[in-house]
Image (cartoon, rainbow, N blue to C red; front, side):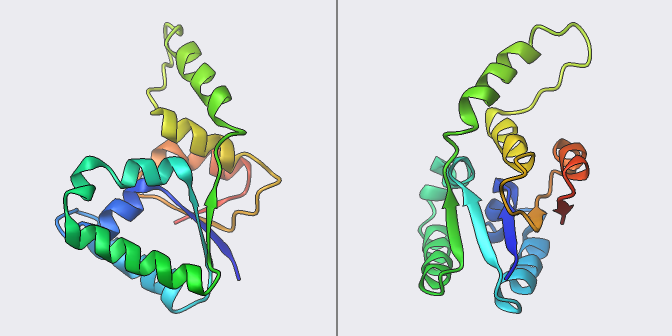
Length: 148
């Protein structure tokens, strides 16, 4: 069983049929979680971004998400990753970044937390699914994480 970390863009696209990446997200979900018994690892900040007010207002999307999570939980193939070891460092980096006169990197706090997770060699990360490759490609390459 491989561990597959996901970004909020993937989860949002998976449950929002109007999202431009919906079809790809569905294909990835089938390939990595239906066809093969991999473990889905979702950092808590990703859930916070995914289950925004917009999604929470859509009963159909929330129900589909709940159904998939229950199924994976019953099969012991989901893990919710705590961000406590990464968030303070990420917040500090966010503020320091604004002090740069050039090469400013405008990343959200969530993306910075995820980047720290991706750089943590103690975490087993076989795949990382994102539709925002440019924000993670460098850290994934450096730490030998496969980006999908």
